[in-house]
Image (cartoon, rainbow, N blue to C red; front, side, top):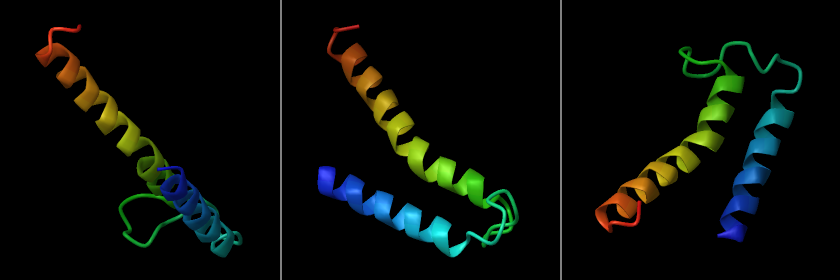
Length: 64
């Protein structure tokens, strides 16, 4: 897991550095979200999803 996190971090930093001349809040490749929003989604969504799954698991096991 730490290796995957480190690899993801390297990819995010590399992408941001490639786009350094552009504003992180300008248009992104998908034209729907800004680059800043895409980075936020890519970094926060997995944690939110895992948190929801853990809460569901705790409720099912009678731990909550």
